Image (cartoon, rainbow, N blue to C red; front, top):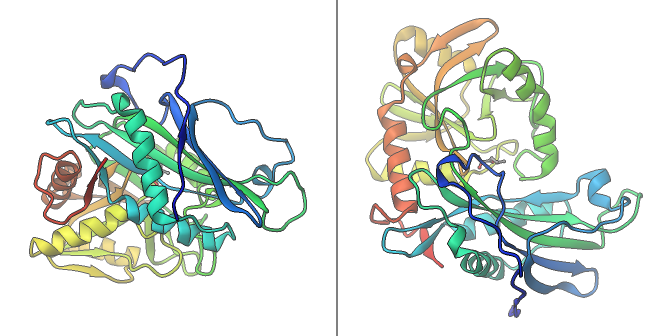
Length: 355
Ligand code: COI
């Protein structure tokens, strides 16, 4: 498919933010990408325009039934001035997996990557360079028919916005305290857990609020049927190191196939560390802790990259992992992946794509 992206530059460029206090997802760049879909016509009119509000009728379907998908990836500026994206095709392939689940028409993967590159290039001066910062790229698709009946929409918008970001958690790369949620579930097999669709995140909020009130940073999600098997941590995939072996829950329909998860598995295996994808129960983690074989636990995701878990609380039983300190595997994965992303470490995997 070949499309021509039109570019309308802003007349009022904004001031760039202080790179040492970016936080996450609070500041947006000067431009955004938009493309429309109309039944019978397909995806059309790709354009880059000044960042600003959308005008949508209150009856727009996405507001009522949440037929939408999103992605997240990052751009980095290297010390020699190149701009790198991390595995962007993976995100665009995954948005199509999400699209299929919620009946949104697929997008052309190569064109979507091209759209990201073009937008990042237009706003290249917004890519922060301070340690631990990057330009977060948020592609998303919303259903836009003004209609209150429940059916797939006939019109959509594919939008990409950019946000210069620092650490996702205020703890940064320091370990977080996690509450094991035994009442609410995030997703079930047959549901939308494997898709990156807003409803999954809405469903997670109540447990996140509860965890915060109890003094924890995030929630560890158990399976929706037996509340026994570990699924995800917060918005991230989760890894445990027991007796030298790294274990992560296998993807069984209710877990998101994280790109940082896949990269972590590939990196550890390439480094000679045994990684197993299988079902793992919360009881097994507590038993390993009791036996002294639980060495590390950490979450993986695009936003935080790696977030070590320093403490778990499950049904009133609290355990400390690795003395509440970051472990050597989590440090290795964090340093290597962020090193490759920012061009400081040679990319032997071919993960980065230059803009
Ligand atoms: C990620 O870990 O990248 C996420 O999914 C978080 C995002 C929803 C902000």
